[in-house]
Image (cartoon, rainbow, N blue to C red; front, side, top):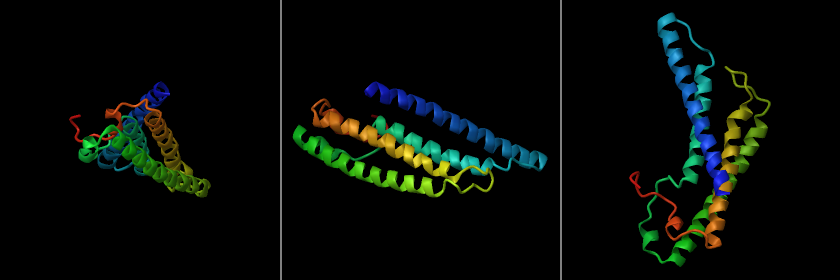
Length: 169
């Protein structure tokens, strides 16, 4: 399972890089066209905004897998292994609940907006909200995988401190 999640995150990193590259081309191209030739790409602003939302959510999935979100772990590090396990389970339970709320809301928004069209591109607005569904499912799988590893004793004590105190670590 760990290998599959790592491959998935590698794929997501490639998608994020592609989103960023398309955004740069669209925005830079639009600036050149606007100031140099008094024209522009009509869909540039809307599509760039969508790509930014998508790469943000996809990046959050990768960060979740790599435990790259910042957090304060001073108290958790002082606890014995059993205390770390209890805090980890409570923490992940709350995150799964929040993930479920985001997933169910995103699913509803995707369905509601499936037939609505974006003004510039004409694309379905459901595409915009679908990234929340992808995020919710992906993050849910990652959270459940980590939780099962802790509950079955497969995770080390260091893995139960699932945050980074600073960017140096």
